[in-house]
Length: 489
Image (cartoon, rainbow, N blue to C red; front, side):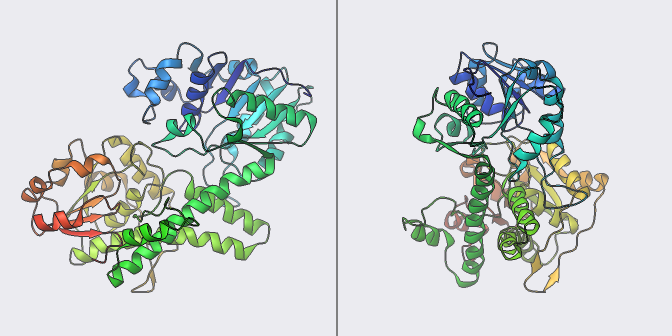
């Protein structure tokens, strides 16, 4: 594979939050390349092929328009994995790499079973040389394991392994793909490795300036993704740590964030305090980084990064405890309205959403939770809570006031459904609620008639704003008691 022909056929294994949007944009920007996205989930593929673009399995601003332009022209979604592998010169692997829930590394290491299955299927099907691109977030040196599996068949097919991790922010993924800060490509420092890197560079060059395409060794590329997410999560945990101090001293965390963000050495991004970060990447990647550091006997480094997770757990616990304490130390039988369930606005992704964990803590005290989210389905909300009961990550949250560990009981699905109600209308979710908890920063929440809400609620009424989108001074005038994160309530 010393010389690679220009790419005409691309296959992507995995039609999720990364594979679907990324391949849709590649197909849009490269009409001369056939892009075939495959997944074993028949319903997911059916949704990608649905004539009603509102039924796409992923909500992302701008995605429907991109799919509409390319689907049926050079973008195809199917479950025919073997056909797609056979025809492609370049194969993206974009499958889930969750944290292990069993065995060695349980609770921290990345579970690579889906990556391994992809590699074995590629090795079985491939009849000619292929370029394999890691798109999933993976531990450093995973490419070495892939290479071993792919070359174990002895059929003479040659594979080049590249790492090209995604740096998308959900809610702005299409914008990020159209105008990326950078595309990162890691490859082997060999003649054939460099040729494979150039082949992928040529694909991206159809719309990305060359200076925005960064090439490295494959190990650096793999570790860069983990490091980027660790640094971003660290900033969130840092400002959230300060938010706790603000509440005790009467300072305003937003004012502090604005002040320090003016320092060009710090910058303003990722300094918004909140109930905690969520999503599929930050927690998973930091835990993976911690596991790698422990594996390579770097305990001090592992402890440093683990503290970022501990602070995130603490922030969610602190938010939940504030609700319970304010409602006279019990929420049993009380109606708590949740505005938002997605981990951030402009996405229907709920993975590791703070709302799940806040709900779980309140359910421990048998609160009656009423949820409204404009994009998350009722089935997904119940599935999230059910999954947490059986796959609960050991948490290290310590209640600072009592110095006692938090203990969690497992709720049955029947108990969850009896205590959690999902609404299609936000006003019915809030009607007669003892308190409202704002868990996602959806723009529509800023437009509500809060006077109407107040008049239809039990009084006194409390709003716990975990995303700092509700105007504290304005709602105080109406009559609410407002508890904004880090506002010295």
